[in-house]
Image (cartoon, one colour):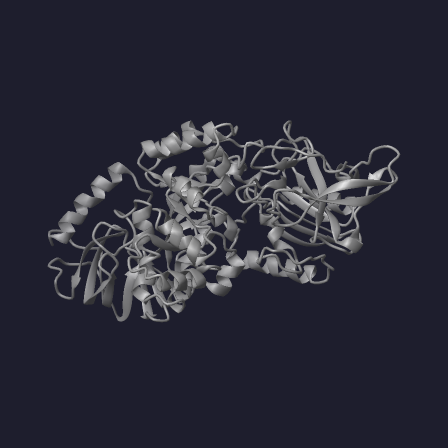
Length: 613
């Protein structure tokens, strides 16, 4: 089921014979019209011949000269190619790839370029094993892995490690490997004295050697010298543009622009206002979307509907999720168009303007009716390297989360961060000392935030004070094993004992979310695969998330307005991405290491600082 050179030779020999009418097709499907994404034109009253899961022939009704074992009439529908994800973290759906297929295929998604630095930080040597397993077991979803460049995310984080030798092996081992996952540590690419400089350039060079794609992450790079330097590096894309002007400048300097849904209306409208006519260097992308949100909003079909509403014609919007990402990722022999040799993946629409999906076909077979998934989901017994990934090594106690004061002090100065702290300097506040320990200050919205190393088995804990997040209720804590991008365990809490209770419960569960409220575990969400995903249907994951939200509604959460527009009051779910260490982050808390024993480090320069002083 996965692509190989020998397999391609064999199947394409068969396709030739079917196309010439010398051998029968497996199935002939007749549709009202087909969108040719290469020319952005329609073929009316068309038919498609399938052979071994590929398109063998396409043309007007009656033009196929061969025979077919079965003929299917879908003339009431318009057909477009299976939709693709140019940049997605399936891990952020929180379900394993075989269940991801059941979720997204009925919503038009037949192929995904998986940006794997999430899973790769957990089990780097098994990157391809994991992402190719579902397809090997019979899943219709094509996953094209891009092994992680951010492994580790910065030089100041220890643990998993991938370099150019690993990248060369990944590219040689499978034709499904599409390139290098988003390069996020721009300071390491730019600055030769950065300790990660050689590692990252070895991965980029290995990707160049295979003529594969180096994906980018240019968050915060908006000045003209910076944009020029980023494009000159050979990094090919950016999905972090926040405004139309930023996207326009990056597009005009050679970057492939991948527009996420939360900035899509503004960016598309702005590019139209600026007169963009050739949209071939633009794609729509999901990046991160939970199973709960996909159940509610949709997958790539949602992105297309947003693009149409923002002003694009339906045909261009479809190009942004088919041929454009396929060309960018150099995958056009297999996906991106309904054309001979490509996978027989098509989305049948009852209304093109509204992008209403009636059916989805993949590998030449119908796989959905409405949003109902038709095939049986393959059962995969994931091995220990995927299921046993929480290695704290011991039971934690309240003392692990305490912050000691200097002897004889009644107060201490504390370094303070807030979610999405993007300034050059951390905040400082004076905090009280009780019985030799520096205390939180709920009256000023000061709580305690921690990172627990879940890989080394040493039970190492870094902790400091944060503002504007976390619970105000006593003996309450929230912990999660999804902490972008290193995915150590993070925990925020109103007491050290509650934080220890929360993390211990999470470790016993094997990963996920745990909420302790007033000393009682009140909600769990299980991510038993890599601490990031669950091997269950999307609906099962969503049910646990809804129970977590319901329990969280009973908690009094601290909040302070932030300049970041996506930091909201209430349950602080986005703390899972507040631990990012890529640009534009500066100071942040990482797991303890020899370089940063207390964990507070400037991730662009490597400067460290005590958490209290």
